[in-house]
Amino acid sequence: MRRYYKYNPETLMYEATEEPKALRLLRIFLCAVAAFALVFGYYMFYTRVLGWELPKTVFLRKSIVRYESKLEVINRQLDFYDIALSGIEDRDDRVYRSIFGLDSVTVVNMPAGREVGARADSLSKRIVMRLNSLEEVKALARSAGDMASHVPAVPPIYPKIGSYRISSSFGSRIDPVYGGGEFHQGQDFALGTGNPVYATADGVVELADIKFYGYGNEVVIDHGFGYKTRYAHLSVINVTEGMEVKRGDVIGKVGRSGKATGSHLHYEVMYKGKRVNPKGFMDMEMSLDEFDEIIEKRQEQAEYKDDRMPSTMELLRRRR
Image 1: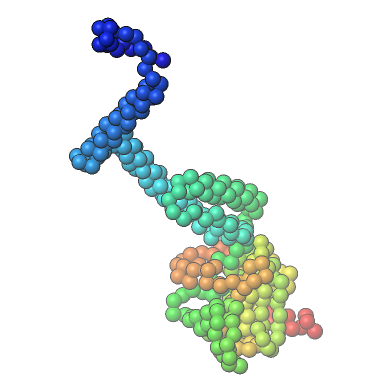
Image 2: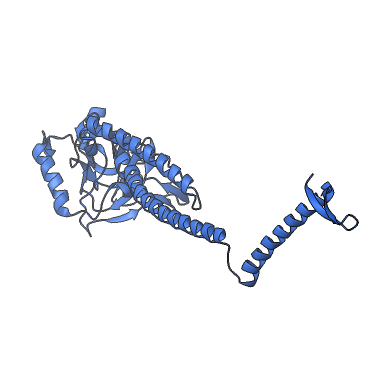
């Protein structure tokens, strides 16, 4: 116990005595209460009366503001990278992979909100996927060589404005003969009988058929890499099955054979067994000089002339 001295009036002397433990604990408790009250009072006066923030609070708040500013800068950079990567993905899927007959890459969606970690992880995965995709395209480009010439990419008729009209587009329509709704699986070019019909890409003639119903006189070309094209309602067929053709070769002439209400060319593009919209595979506004150059170059390279190609009557004779 703590010792202290107390004056004794009887002996007129200071006598040593010991402080009770309870009294010492009480004094410690009172000191603690006083210290807490002092701190609390300081806090209340500083924050409630003066309206100030504690130094530590000010420091933490400023730190939070700095970190939020840095996160906002990072998010803006991620937005920029996301836009740039989206452009690369779009070109890769719609141009590069489409040219080589490859399916689109499944994209990892960017997480909603502004969570930097999740967004960065998503971008990282997308970059890796796109790098792998481009490597695949690169490998095919090296091995395929002239593959681009096998993708339908030009109009099947001479694209002079005013010389034709689109009489029926790809999609839903009313059947012109039987009435009622149907899905038109190609694109119809209305123009005069006898106009030349051109192969829209390199390939091998899979079908050269003469008939008086349905598609009428038709030609189907297998271009490889999953692509085929159909040219129907022809008046003349200039090719035979198994014949190799090049883009720009005249394969027949416009007519109105089969189930046709007027002179026109029915043109289809098939990819991996499914009809697709031909509009996405040709530029009807391409310059005539560019189209003429394709035709003239092909005529110079051709190993045969139009008059040496089999006529429709010859095809009928061979079938008999």
